[in-house]
Length: 527
RNA sequence: GGGCGCGUAGCUCAAUUGGCAGAGCAACUGACUCUUAAUCAGUAGGUUGAAGGUUCGAUUCCUUCCGCGCUCACCA
Image (cartoon, rainbow, N blue to C red; front, top):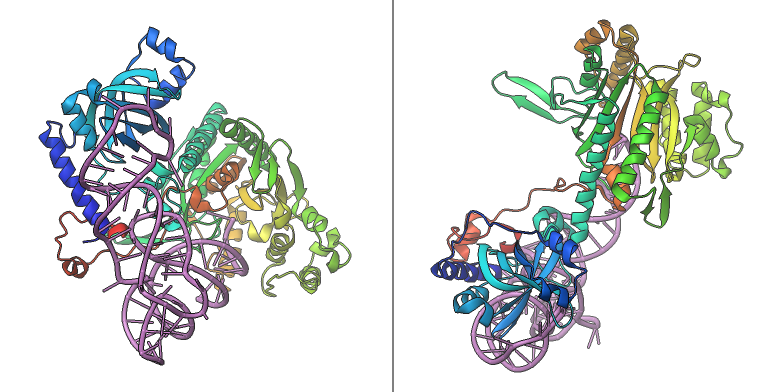
């Protein structure tokens, strides 16, 4: 028998003894008068004399996170909503029966405490307990109280334990929730309505990525998990929802990394009768508001640097390439250098000669090469909020072209902390142009680009009914949370990030220990 | 997928050149009616991720596998 199975059995025995004392093992409810944070907020300013003069009776529920037992008395800390309140148990005050229960409690148990507030000799606000109510047993031992849980694998696999032990983790997800609330409030206030569009799509469109495939049995049809809601949201603008947004998951069948999780949360919004500049301003305002709502200010810490969300710069993609052109690559490019396949190739060769690692495919469109050039030399400099605008048409199959430069589109992206966090454009609403763009993408697909966009006939039909001019945007919620919480891996802002399945305890394993599986906790702790 | 690194008690970590596998916390027993990383005395807890190899002897060296982290490539 392994140690924690031993602890598990010991605690089950304690649970039986608790039942024998007349307390249900798994009671239905507890009528509390205050939460722990409420007590701390309301009474932290009161002195021992104040509390003696006007006695405050309370009933509080929480999880026991520390126990200090001293003969016929003892102290413990009750944790609720990430905050802790001490309570004092004295045999004289709680009675023999209550004291028996007290001795059967373990770290991690949920209990209710009835009593009155007082201050200990050392001045800590505490509950003088008069009655304990058992609420739920922790059968598995919590991690060590001082170092807590630090093993990253265990933190992600057993996030519930991580959340109990690490208040800063809890804080990250509270901020995430506040951020999403803030976006909803902002877009609602601007007359947008929130909608939900299909997660399972017959054609995975609206972005450049490889999808997950699934299957519906009754219809006997293959479906894809969406890589973006874009094409459905734009169908809704055709239908007369002039301002729509959706906050939900996208799924992309690609590698994992510090900025990438296969499922991630995106805010997408579409606004009729405006263009890329209009939606750019809306997005910037929404993000500035979210930063204020989450942090209370306009500056955040990102590792060694401070990000100033009140100070944005805007550069075209070409300007950014010029501005961050490596010295070793010689004279900075001029506008005409971006115009032809050959001149773009020359730029790539100069940059490579300067020691920059950059792949080059002679068969790909020049616009795609330019985008690669931008990512290779400019992206790493974009730490402060920066809007890069005017993207090549070749990589923007859903954006309107610039009227005077058809090789370039009215598209922009926001970069912060070297990460792309938003992508918006003037939405292409010409069905014939859209068909030609899809056809160009199909050629890319034939060339071997699995991520190139597919033809979507129904989407073109929808555009053919007339889609109003519109600006649209997608905002990467996870990455924005990373920036606002100084989290340097996306896994720290996703409650249950994708991990390999953990090895299960097999029957052979349990037979070897001579134990039945009935009570064996089936997790890594016992394997 | 490539490169680098890690895996020792429930948790956090030690173990000299290859020479008896340890500590703190958690747990168990006992003492203690204002402690707060409570204290004091004692007890128990290990197939050192797995399999194989070298060796008189492997946590340590070698091979393979499993898991995790970092990083590069592709993607947001």
